[in-house]
Amino acid sequence: MYTLPRKVLSLTPYAPITGEMSIRMDANESCFPLPEALHQRVLQRLSQVELRRYPDPYAAECCRLAARLYGVRESRLVAGSGLDEILSLLSYTLLEKGAKAAFFETDFSMYAFYDALAELTPVPLEKREDLTIDVDAVLEKINREGVQMLVFSNPCNPTSLLLGHEEVERLVKGTPALVVVDEAYMEFSEDSVIGLTECCQNLLVLRTCSKAGGLAGARLGFAIGSEALILALKAVKSPYNVNALTQAAAAAILEDPQYIRHSAREMAGYAKALEKDIRRLAGEFPVQIGRVYETHTNFVYFELPRAAEVASRLAEKGIAVRRIRGHLRVSTGLPEENALFLGALREILSSL
Image 1: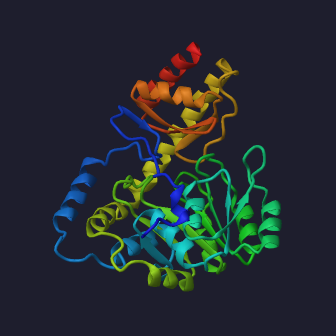
Image 2 (image 1 turned 120 degrees about the vertical axis):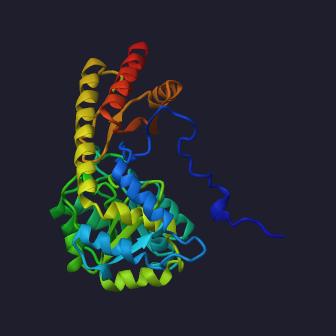
């Protein structure tokens, strides 16, 4: 009789917030609907897709446009159906079963998830008390443990903190391990290490169209690295991994890099303003709100001892935010949405 393997018996499905919410500030998506002209360009592209045909197996047009956007050669870039597909490929195919894979305990939870499914040996890493990364401590541990892959987000999801270019370079050059830097939120900052992939054969950088590009619903991400790493990923991915509709929509967006850059600047400004307003609330409610972290992304992360209760009460008001233990992670909305969130939060904190 068939039985489920032990590695999946204790797993529960990923549980994003679902249902109708009037304000969505939980998933770090773009707060902007597509401008009408760009929306029409996407629709025109979609209307030309031959659904009876398989898509381009390498999403060549998207890769060409993304290579132009990121300033790399097309041969050093591969497309995936969202970064999740690429992350799972890394765990399942670039390491042997039992190999040691490192991740930070306060970081995107799916890194550890895919490593566990691939039956890798986990090497969890701690951050400092203020949730910053101690590069010397990390290098000492991963080299001592013989870690073969380290994955981390920069800027970090959920903390929104940034590890500077020089520190990332020191980390990459200080270990023989494969270092995967998930730059899903780097559009909102200016410290990318994509340029280091030219000289560092053990570096892979991940980027996405889901944030400033406004294509979270289409699912498209890219890995950028040495030609050897990219050839390996092309060899192990499924033949038609990025569907034709996603390729068509993404090409329309990637043709307009100015839109992506403008959206990123606007959202980064909104997030900074939201951070400032939350800090002001922390001054009014010093018992209820703890540390507010500096944002380098399109969201704000702050300590809230009664986070579960506050998130639940915000949901009752139609406002979705993400609770992560004793913290809230709040994606920026449009300014009017941020104002409604702040008003609701003030009302809830006043009643606690």
